[in-house]
Image (cartoon, rainbow over all chains, first blue to last red; front, side, top):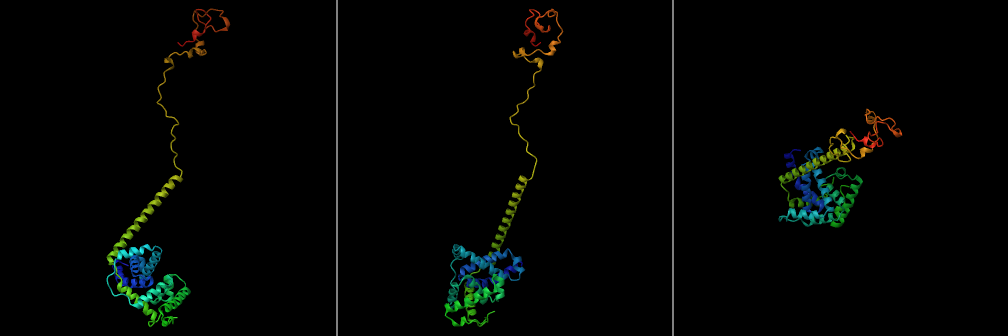
Length: 165
Length: 143
């Protein structure tokens, strides 16, 4: 991947990846920060990024791992807040989005990640296995339990009926 | 893959879109600059590590491999050698007087003073002094 291709890839995917990581992490500032860090790492590994043909998945995985590392060192979240500064005034998320993100926060991290990859990134179970390294049965268990937990927390019986199962 | 009509999927997409709208993305120049800086740091770390490995390996090899033994310094500091005086110029010392008579002196040709027959004690006639004939000590003085 050349510099120009990387710039084009960054412009095309950074906002989408930030949105995905926001749902995974439940914190927009942290999502912005880890996505930016993942792109910085990806810049110096542009050839590796291009080798497997899935650079977006590479960035997403690196950003997730960075976030997991940051959970171990929580003080970095304060630094990210200081670096990014106060966000400009934009229309806030609606009650449904807030409720979903709040409900997702109460799920275990891997379960949250699996749910996001499946329902937001449209990955199949096999693709999630390839990206996370977990077994297919674990992925399916995460999806079933996560869906049940979200239906319970969001008080929406339609969610509990899994159309994909 | 979940169906498009799945309400949970719609909720996920709405939440992601909300985060995407509010996200502040850094310009790509900033990313490239940080990427270059990280690359430089990594290259410097690799070079420093390689230098350390080479230096450590060289030091270990120099210590383990047999080499030329170092020259051993003398136990004491040698002083410059003075030219020894010739035995003929050595000053006379009292010790010399007690030296036993040498064979060279025994072959000294007898003088007329010591040629008296009947010297007492079996003393060689060449060692006897000519004046009194009793003391051989005087004849031991160096020439």
